[in-house]
Image 1 (cartoon, rainbow, N blue to C red):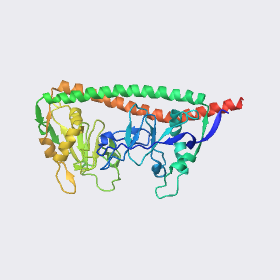
Image 2 (image 1 turned 30 degrees about the vertical axis):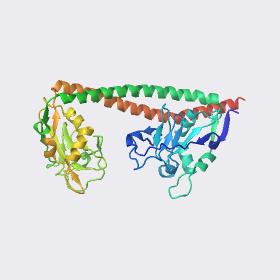
Image 3 (image 1 turned 90 degrees about the vertical axis):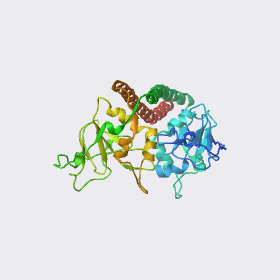
Image 4 (image 1 turned 60 degrees about the vertical axis):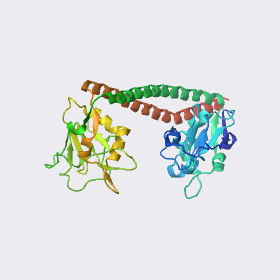
Length: 378
């Protein structure tokens, strides 16, 4: 038969080995996101990580307890040549019988909304609405012959190899950018305040209406505000092209300055935000400054220089007093161009990853249809 119905338990086996290392850092621990891939570093780790689990190469890790909550089975396949370490909440398993199903085919099969709904439908009635290992093993799936499986796995692996090659080039570009920034230590420092001035442009004549109100996220992107404004917006600040805007109220969880540089059309923001612009663009490139303000070492300065008790604030006067390296404007432009190229390629890489995930249900559908055609023709 070209199509076979099999229980998951007939080809999987749990793997339980702890790392026995009590002091792992977030950089050494992996999580699994909704796109079903590992990400590092993990968002957080416990005080004692000795019970954290090892995920060997070619093994899967999944969180069966989150299926009902997210209507997604968070699962990933370790395709690297080294072990990964994950939270003890994850279930680790391997494919023990590849005469029934190829591990890559099973991973592709798991990468679809249809399969997520299938797992969600079979969750238990516990508080978390999760799934037990036994229930997971008892579920049935339909698979084509190994020949057909391999054909579609080869298509997926070819696309994955292209994405990984692109990503490696992206990493090289990031290393170049980081090395360039590190070399800035050779240049003379100067206070930011010598090159900027506060922006106090208000929407007094109400030239802009509520449709022009924007917020911004932690990636420096202007977005629709989280809440609608029904009152007076005449006090809102006008942000012209080239203006910076940041939230002086520091989020202790994010631990960085939430800041944006407007490179588009004019807009208005809440008067609670602080705004400034570069006055000497022949000596300080606005995007060069924006790059420095986004770096981790600057985030540390923000936290160190923030004031308050329950709520921390980072005043513009404090920002003005911070020193940064000021190379010649051509060197700044060169670094900006490298950084912009990196960001553009990072965006393309994210698109490639998205296409890779979206192709999975198409590949599964194609393999099943091919198997049915073989059945129909005897």
